[in-house]
Image (cartoon, rainbow, N blue to C red; front, side):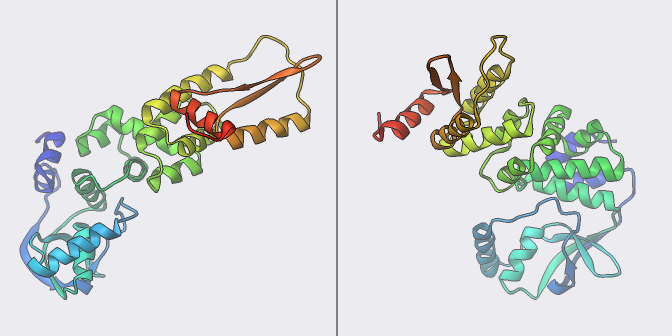
Length: 286
């Protein structure tokens, strides 16, 4: 049986060729575009409207050159590969499109849609993680089996799956592109959802890079270690003031109260942080 990681590099045809289950297929047929149904197992949840419009413009001029891959059901032809081209063909006003009909199983449909999107770099990190989780939960595959099927290292699959443990707000930021998957992975060592969410807010406010985020997490973990020195408990008024300092400056602020006074500690994690804090307090750029 051919190696699946090699099959990913050669394309969808190679995966079918390497599948123990025989897959029957037709030659290229022409079917009505309204006979085609989107794949309910499509891992991609959003499409770039501008890129879709550009593809539609190209199809209007040149037609749909590459056939869609579908499987036939009682309801119609269900897409396996080519949903972006199908939607662009609809925008272009095509009434008929070329297709190749393959006989597949539900697992094939998910795997092939996933592989096509990985090949085209169409999935964000969270969509890819959800697709892997679906393969594991619905079809009983191990992480190693998933990695083999999609041609990636097991550690890559494991790290992506860990993104699904992040709080909903952080996952939403990764899903809509405000944070990259690498930013999300950098937040995983933080022990609580509250810390992860607070760190995300700081990343977004200061525009931190992945490297700066990793440095931020290191410092947050160091700050979270128990301090053996006894400290007076802060009053509700001082806790509120500390929270307002943090919201205003976009970084961690500590108020330490002593017998006759105290100190305010403003934490920063890079030169860019320090410049942003200075500008917030003084009101001009360094």
